[in-house]
Image 1 (cartoon, rainbow, N blue to C red):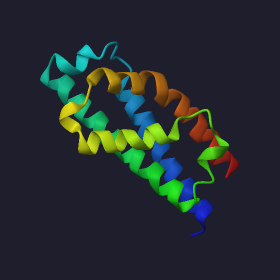
Image 2 (cartoon, rainbow, N blue to C red):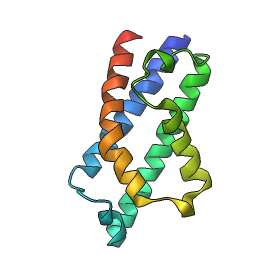
Image 3 (cartoon, rainbow, N blue to C red):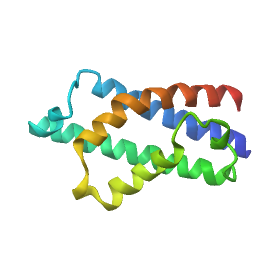
Image 4 (cartoon, helix red, strand yellow):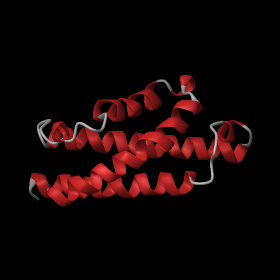
Amino acid sequence: MHKNEMSEAMLGKIEQTIERILDNSRCIDSYHYYLLSPAGMERLESTCMLLMAIGEGLKGIDKLTDKQLFVKYPEIDWKGAMGMRDIIAHHYFDLDAAVVYDVVKNYLPAMLVTIKKMRKEL
């Protein structure tokens, strides 16, 4: 499989994952939701797992494209998105529900738009 095809396929998986997070979080209107019930904690944990998958996928694409793809789309903080994976994986007990909520509500929608654009342009 060609590098562009592999990148496009991974972007497709990331797109689906972002859509899943956004759908699962549509009714959440505060980071407090995550902290007030066992169901909220489960949602936080599942969201973090999916954010880790997104970060890992982005790292793979960055390596596959020799760091040349994401620089064409500077409207997204790709380094921050990849770093989120590391924070969740290595500093899980320091994780801040407010940060996760902020990422989901304020950063993922724009990333979804950009990833769709990237897929069309590949």
